[in-house]
Amino acid sequence: MELSEGRLKFIEAWGKLGSEWGINRTMAQIHALLLISPEALTTEEIMEELTISRGNTNMNLRDLIGWGLVEKQHKSGERKEYFYADKDTWNIARQVAKERKKRELDPIIKLLNELSEVKGDDKDRNYKTFRSSVKDINKLAKNVNKTLETMLKAEESWFWSSIFKIFK
Amino acid sequence: MELSEGRLKFIEAWGKLGSEWGINRTMAQIHALLLISPEALTTEEIMEELTISRGNTNMNLRDLIGWGLVEKQHKSGERKEYFYADKDTWNIARQVAKERKKRELDPIIKLLNELSEVKGDDKDRNYKTFRSSVKDINKLAKNVNKTLETMLKAEESWFWSSIFKIFK
DNA sequence: TTAAACTTTCAGTAATTTTTGAACTTTTGA
DNA sequence: TCAAAAGTTCAAAAATTACTGAAAGTTTAA
Image (tube, rainbow over the protein chains, first blue to last red):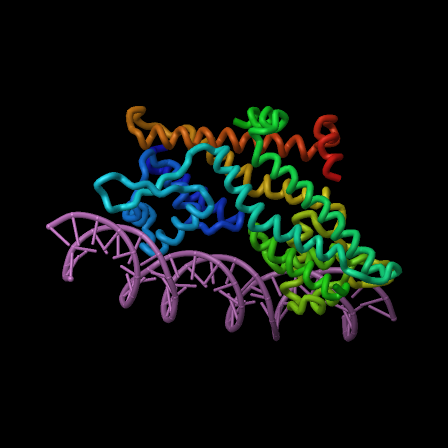
């Protein structure tokens, strides 16, 4: 396979994977493009490479920066902004985990705690099942949460940092 | 909070969570409803509770069965089919991991292996970055894959089964 | 074999999400 | 201070995804 074909396939696959996990396809594609680009790119270059509009490019780049996956760079003597993606897979995974935890896990734990307080009749089977399901999911969510928190500050833990070395 | 309100919030939240992770909202809501229902429910009951059409209910139930999260039940003397969800959170997580691995991870690993074969000029910076990114992601994907495989047959491993007891 | 009870399918419609592009804002250098 | 170049915004359009409902299919019992 040629490089140019490989690049296209990579971008396409990364976009598809993103959309299967609730991430905007274009955003994932821009990320993919930056991942395989040695130098930082301009908005123009991204627009052209992926044939998408200026507005779309701009918005998705901001989102990627918001996710901590891409950073703006300025070259001295130039007005233009350049965009660069961190290529360390472990950092990428870390960032994504961190963001999704904040955006999704934290709110769901908050809700589950509220739902644990629901009052009802202990003889009501609906009530018993509700309580039991909420309790179990809550427990799982809290464990995942605790694990993520530990992972996200792995440096401090000899246990996790040795586990992670296996992955690196 | 009252039970009826809690049930609605739970269903809503599960649906939202699903959609954030690339799972059809209605499918997640049906799953949520079954999770908090002590008895298996009929199509009619689900339709009514969630105010969705028969066709929608039927298709999403099939998908849930396909994901291994819901099972059909038959009550003797009755024509109707009843649907029941496994309420063990660990089984749910397991099933989801198993299915997503099969549907998404396996194909991406296949592609990454192909992309590892891309030929090019070692002096080309684009080529070098491409190779390096593909290689790193491939490594991560394979490690995740191996870990999932181990987890999915956790019973056989004293190490993982003791880790999992923490989560249960 | 018929009919009632239930399930499945899918073309058309509706809802949601994403993208465009042109107007607007900001920055910079002359 | 101005105009060119770059960056941002967002209403409307396009694309995608999900849902409905009615017709077709299946199963069961008499």
